[in-house]
Length: 159
Image 1 (tube, rainbow, N blue to C red):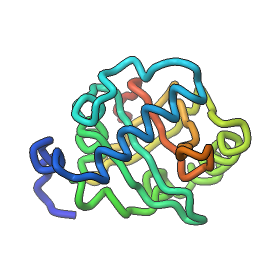
Image 2 (cartoon, helix red, strand yellow; image 1 turned 180 degrees about the vertical axis):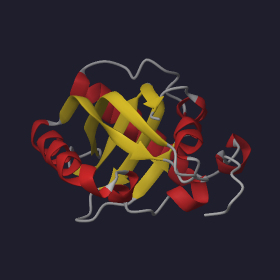
Image 3 (cartoon, rainbow, N blue to C red; image 1 turned 120 degrees about the horizontal axis):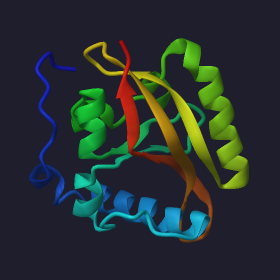
């Protein structure tokens, strides 16, 4: 990660098929599992520029981030190229990882989890509290679980 942070502008990602397909996967999975729209413009550009924090990771044993929108980059102070591929467990402090894992497992079994909260740390060391997080499974066209996503808009910096 570089010492000076500059979030990735939409123009650099707009022609990336992975971004478009992941955006669609997130929006469609949310609607399928929660029975409602994400309450944002669900186009690839709309999700990316949403003020809500939107992230996803793959479905591997030690999942890695596959999507982060602009708001998430700004909150964690990590550029797209450094965020994508990062093991998602590293988004939580060591002492937060077991509760995070329990919640992810519950979401995996039930389809989604509403109301998660926890402490995270940005790349520049600022700690922040996230709350009212919705975690949901990502489902491919066949209904198979291929990862998980998180959406939230409530957070505050800690002292």
